[in-house]
Length: 128
Image (tube, rainbow, N blue to C red; front, side, top):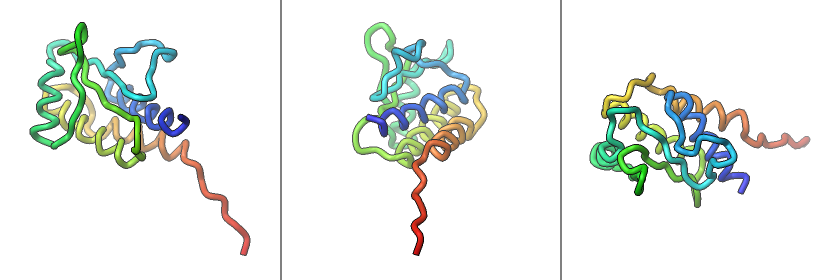
């Protein structure tokens, strides 16, 4: 559970760096399995999902029911590591830029990298 929380926090750091918001506004509603990310007004999240797949062979989840067209989802549950999450964030970031979202290229990935580096368990050196 701790690993999933750490990976999810990396995604949340990226979303914040992009200047976007999660669908789950309050931290007690944040999920450690998937993050639903609100796209800016005027952007259709279905286009984000389609572009990610067609341009970068990356599957992002679409919004369902009331949030269809308003959010895309990034999953962070299962056999994942930091590098896999960073690859997903890179694809999402490039896709958002392609779809006209104004954000600083590399900002989300950099925020996630800093989080992962800051929270990594460092191996303890053993004396010879």
